[in-house]
Image 1: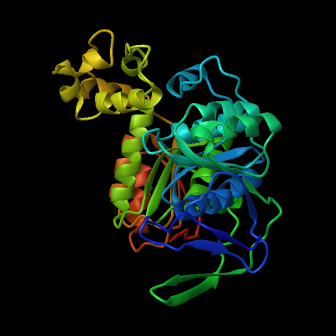
Image 2 (image 1 turned 90 degrees about the vertical axis):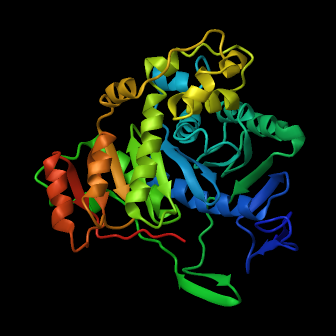
Length: 389
């Protein structure tokens, strides 16, 4: 098949809409009908997880929304706390399932209604997890018979399932049109590897293997994230992604706040929230977000809590949050371009960042290095810009 009609373009009024290729389309629709944004998510996300798989030799996954990842990860085993905050206690978890569970867990609020991207075959364990989550579709290179049966029953049989041709190689030149003008450029086929981390201008030059893995995840994530962008990573997954901001420090703050929320979900205050058993996962996520955030008084100082909890929780004070966040350490941070000022490093330090990778090349590199040295942060200059639009 060389052409596929879509439901509509970016918006329902943008009809007709289609995708087409000079050769065969590199994917097959196994179920459902794709939309324009679905395919943008699927094809951008597939490139990301394919590169993560090649760079780490581990199953990889991404949770995509509006052409940027909400989360990315590789298939590292989950500890008991992560199982609890990702709602998978007592579940069978394969390596591919672990990768997607981690990817979706980076920012569960943003992953609501995502497109799931898998590097390896979708197995029964991954399908069973997806069955219980709100998701618009999935792309993977293959599906087990049982996984396909499970996914075809999702969303009353309309769940979008795409099978990607893992051997597909696109043309070196890529094109797109904007306002009747055709843009053409060489595909960004630069390879991200540990070799990118060899130029270390900071006093601390120690990058343990765990940090190298996290930085590879963060850098490859940024390669397919709308710029400007930064990514915080820890334990084999993104924990905060800041995308599409005009100011880099705003990216750093946005992603840092997401990383903080990810870690605050692991606090005793959140783990022990007395949810009523009938409260569904999306409602639990919303309630946790409110409980951790600035709107907690609206929840706890009114009768609203009675609709969610069996008993009224104690307020999670700002002082208690600061105490808990002091335990967040060993975080890696990557940027898709240089940090222009040391204020980015100041904000990163507040979220436990100890390892950084960025392109370098700012006229204030010396200030950025000095700020890293102030906090004993190890920083590598990759000399690679990863803008994506």
